[in-house]
Length: 51
Image: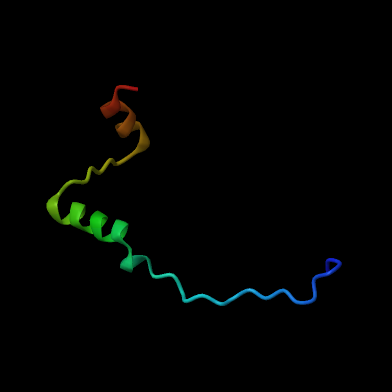
C-alpha cells in the first residue's frame, strides 16, 4: 500500500458488447452493401496497391 492510501477499489463494469457499438453497425452495413474488398493473400493486396 502507498502511504496515506487506505483502500483501493476498482468498480466492476458490464461486459463489453461490441455488437452494440456504432462502428460495428457501420461495418455490418458496409458488408451488406458490398463495400468490402477481399484479398487471398498479402501479396495480392500489394499487387493491387502497386507496392
